Image (tube, rainbow, N blue to C red):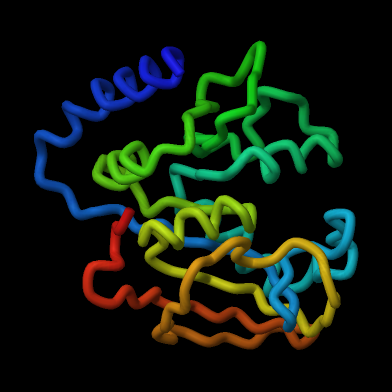
Length: 209
């Protein structure tokens, strides 16, 4: 706990100078592939049935170039190990990485890879700093936690024409219903749909504890 408290203090001190300026609040955008039945991976974290080529995937890869910051949970970071990533690597070299976890430990990490505890205030402070909008790449548990605290601003779904029947949910452990406002809908090869929604928080839900 003492280590977590020190990390929180260091992050807040590092962000203080950025907060002295008036800057627009950065959006957290959950940009993720999902099946029709709401899974971002099948049983055993299998993603083989999702589309990995085509103009929709090209669009996604091009969009990632517009982000300078990515956040994720431990499971999503460690998922990269299956594809040759080493502990401490930065899967998106042009971005600053913030991995939120109370368990993950890295003996060595790239300069742009930081681990922080699951702390709502740290996420809010990150949103208040200068930079692009923030890419939330997963996973379902972390996304559910962020949603429950009113911290996800936009959901951008690569909707695959696929029913998985089980696996990793888009939002695990979400505690209540939320309405979404469709902002954009685009069709791509192979039946892939790109759907962009704003999350509508009612009353005091936004940023709620």
